[in-house]
Length: 216
Image (cartoon, rainbow, N blue to C red):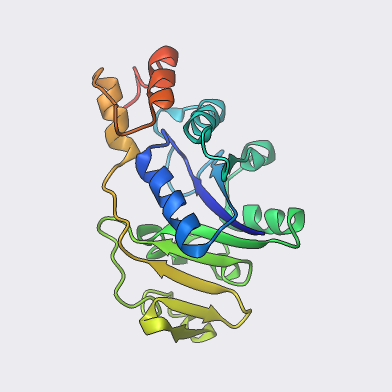
């Protein structure tokens, strides 16, 4: 089985997250996409310190009508900083027969050298790099940290890199939906409509739980 893993704070989850997951699933022929809310993101503070439970619940509501999508509480149960390498190694143990695809935005990929044990990610699973606004990559290999660039071979005009481990990095262009969770939080704080930015069930949850009334 081919399984995509898309992580994030999902604070809140929005239409761009869902569209990215669906496009990657379709273009790479994935059987499932697992949403992985971060319990304690190591690279940025969690705005308003919104609980893992609220963020997990919003993802559940957002994906309820898509049988190819699921959500995992693995990082919430583990506790501590939500390092991607820990999550992916644990998933490999849980799904030894499956092919894993770690889905990240191009903006994050351009900063991957700052990630904890980043070099191990490329020897752990396949990586799908999705174009994000302001993060267009014209040469995927040139975007790699110099320390590991020699571990890859370039294919398909630079859109596919094969790591010496056999795993690959695939660049998926043409998906830059400009929607941000921070902008949605500001709208919610001001009491404005979130329609067409988040699924209706998520908008209703935000209103009923009043979770962003004091968050900026």
